[in-house]
Image 1 (cartoon, protein in one colour):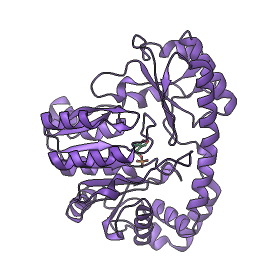
Image 2: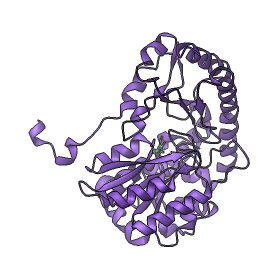
Image 3: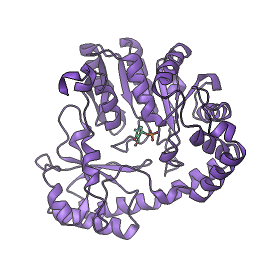
Image 4: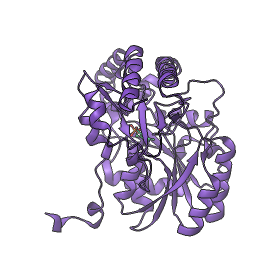
Length: 391
Ligand SMILES: Cc1ncc(COP(=O)(O)O)c(C=O)c1O
């Protein structure tokens, strides 16, 4: 079979953490390893009511093929959401996608030739790297610190590698939980302009913020020369099974992405879009976002307190002012992947950090989510983890 595979298929890489996540569905294990929203945040009854109504009363739309760009009223809503995030756009600038994951794939398909260089943050989202690897791109890491991408690192790598694209997640990044400062966002765009590359700004977590002072204004709000391809998603605030994400980009690029999408799936699921459209048109999203924030805010506080109690003096971790994750950095000689079996035996699971780093570093890091467990299990899990690490 190997001889029939395309050149791109030979570069496909399975997600290192998806394979791992399968192992930790055991309820006796306290899991900080997942990467998904809690089902407790899904407004399931409302979704069921809306689904029944759109199927019975609007089936000529909800069960039919639809426009590749997306359901018109939903595009209007998304454009308004983006304007609230500081982006100057109209519904014509929006392409609805089957989750923002499809957006990454369409962009990679439309922009990348084999060997093109894509810059990614160290660490970065594995679904992003999968999409770029699948088009045989070369991935090169740029350093991050607590303020986001380090401009000197970006400029140095850009000068050396002539990238076509930078992939960044400025708001509460997966996996690091970091928020890039507005000053860094401006510097990143200045460097993108100087070295002439495009920027994918992936923003599924911007609304999930737990502190008042976090400034999540989109990088695209400063995009004077149409360099930024902005991605959004309803997955983290509503339900990821609804597979509704979007792209806002320059018109010439958006029409190419639309053609790529026609080839991929003609249109995103009309039932999913219809449900999200009815929910948002009824004005229910702001209250839903408040509920989701309140749900995670408490768990995040519990995890940070437990880390302070048990990891103090032994490790550093990111503040997780938003999003679903905190990222822990341990002593240089600790290999978190090697410790997974011991942690599982102790009844606790995490994701080792190395797969998130395209340069092979990060062996002494781990990603912890506070999304899944209740307060008591979060405290107990961190205590067990400290035991595994001999703290
Ligand atoms: C940074 C990032 N981008 C994109 C996605 C994909 O989200 P969606 O459900 O919109 O496809 C995720 C999901 O975890 C993510 O963390």
